[in-house]
Amino acid sequence: MHITAILLAAGKGMRFKSKTPKPLVKIASKPIIIYSLIALARNPDIKDIIVVVNSENKEGILRLIKTYRIRKIKGVVKGGEKRQDSVINGLKALDKRTDFVLVHDSARPFIGNDIIASLIKQAKKSQAAIAGVPVRSTVKKVSDSGFVEETIPRKNLWEIQTPQVFRKALILKAYARFGKKEATDDSSLVEKLGSRVCVVPGFYSNIKITAPEDLIIAEAIFRRKKSLCKK
Ligand code: CTP
Ligand code: MG
Image (cartoon, rainbow, N blue to C red; front, side):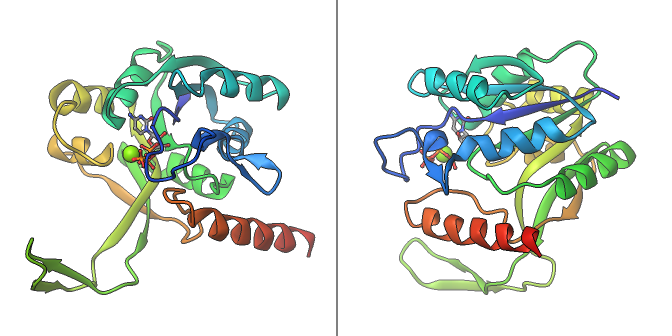
């Protein structure tokens, strides 16, 4: 079984508002991108990692890959304007032997082998598996003028994260057909094909570093994880 991970790091980090490119900003003592690179490289089913970068962070990321001796790097490719364009560039670099593709946002540093392995196991059964957690907040649809239109029953609402794992043929077909349509994740393009996608319960701590305050939360999650390991 040949699984290729595409690790996305080509975003501009506009909402993060830092001089240092977001993937290179440190949580505790390590740059954000290193956490997911280490986790992906450790999984025995993942044979290749393709890192999608931009011109501002390419040199820094290449340096980190060397410093941390990250194995399995198959390619470091440039991303595109939108997240989807970056995924397309990653897909172009896949090894022919790839059976499954795992897509992950480097902005989510707290993935562990537990979630990676469960997603891979589920994708082997159902072709497509994505990580998610049940929505905890009340969700309302609000009009552009700021008035509540509807309170959406929370029962079956899930907040979807990455990683997302797909059989190669499925994700290639989804991107070939719908890659130019608006989407905030890869699964939604696969869903457009009419394919079933299984949601694997993930972790609330699998946060995405989006805004500066997320760093404070990330430091706290990191400290908690560290102390759990010591027990
Ligand atoms: N991403 C990417 N290429 C893009 C846009 C996003 O590879 N053209 C990646 C980001 O690097 C990130 C992930 O997709 O790992 C999720 O995106 P997000 O959290 O929105 O990060 P940014 O796009 O960098 O941030 P912003 O939207 O605030 O500019
Ligand atoms: Mg973005």
